[in-house]
Amino acid sequence: MSPDLKFESSFQKEGNPCKEYRDYYSEYNGPIGGDYRFKWICETYFKKAASDNEKVLDIGCGEGTLVRMLAERGYESYGVDASLSGIEHAKKKNIPERIFLSDIETEGVPFPDYLFDCVCCFETIEHLTNPYRAMSEIKRVLKPSGKLLVSIPNPMIGHPLIYPGLFTKRYFKEFLIVNGMKITNIRGWGVIPQLYFIPDRQFILFKIMRRLLHSLYSRYTPVSLSWLWVFEAIMQTQEDMYGKVARDTKPV
Image 1 (cartoon, rainbow, N blue to C red):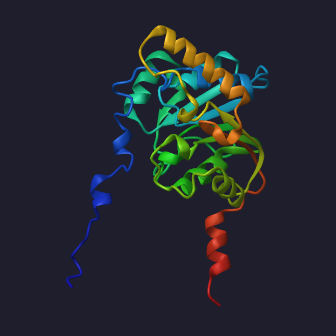
Image 2 (image 1 turned 120 degrees about the horizontal axis):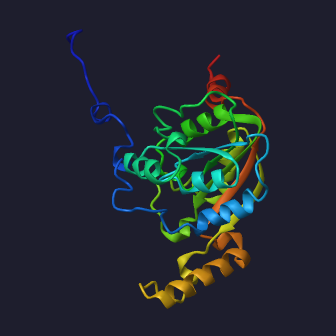
């Protein structure tokens, strides 16, 4: 074989593995599913006004709705997303100087170590090809005393998943623990579609009734039947799991 012969994988040719998400928000000018999920997040996890320039990072911020809502509550909030169309929407109507285009899997996030008091990652990690890489970056920028809020969809809603075995409540909990996080709470939001009986049609009455039902279900539905699960966690150890696996399995 010639020493000058070079091979290039299709992955290398395509470049950014998140190219499929560049135009993710090009035809959708607003928060996906409406803003009441973000309102619930703020009312549940950010009730108190921010103090001492409390910094929050939203990974997978989309068009920046949560970044804006947190800023209105006094938080020093920032957002990153791999979608160019999402970032363009965010810069037009939210806080342009706090929104950044970045692919957490290949580029990381453009912030120094241990900067944030809280890192949010809502309905994003199931879209990634390398969830471990994302967790490593989250731990890097999260303060040792900081909090992680991360959500995954309930498989019962029919969301397509790259790693079906990982994104169950049980195994995602283990994934967080293995990666050095201590889970302090798991909450459910919304409800699986199977429990709805009001048609999903474009009539204002149906919309109002489904929204009221959604709010009611969010309060009283068992976590196992929720639309998504939000894991609240703190960092228990900063140990690198990748390095630990290599050391513990090294042949002697």
